[in-house]
Image (cartoon, one colour):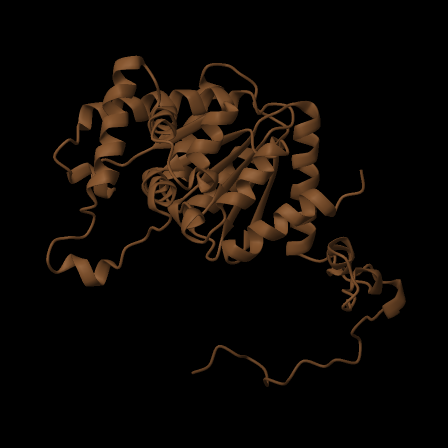
Length: 321
């Protein structure tokens, strides 16, 4: 028994409609193609030579939005994870801070650890496999003492954890302070908020750890970040760089808090930088906050040590002033 009542034959193609190729609107044309560079090319020549397609288009549009935000004096907030520090990008971001392309930094807890260690001794990122077996992973005394002491002092003085860390680290006058985002932000009075997950950072199991202080100062920073997000309305920018879970969740809660209180939050730009486009950054940073005409979201896929210097070059050299 078959469902076909007549003989089954291949579909005929003689009556398929076609059109002239030249009449079609296409997504890619010769003027979008990349061009070669030579040994005499400048950085601007290189940026101009890139194909005006996909990620390059997104990068250029994002840079334009950041220029606009700077002109409008709107926040340009960098939400960063610890890997941004570990890939050697601190001085690139510090330079952008000085140029007005970083007006606030939001960090997860690992940023505090790695940035402070770089500032104090010029190195970070221990070999977990080599130290975990003996229980020595995360046992650096100076790191735990600094972070937990800053949290307690910040609670006492009503500060957020990021500012408290910047103050405490700067007070040490560390040898490598020029490589520290915490020190640079504190010196420039640029807001630096820190958002920790209790138990997620090595300093949380040190003898002087105080969960109440860590929670209180981190909650203060959540409310401070929410105020910065409120000020994004009308042209602000938020970048999520290397945080797959914590900061996308925190940013989304800031967005809903701002709108819950009746504040408008439209005409914003968001972007996610990572070498894997994960669910939360794509959903909570790129898509949801900018939905229904509230703004534009971009995804830039690649390794930070390539994409962030490329963004910096585009900001500095790639746009005609």
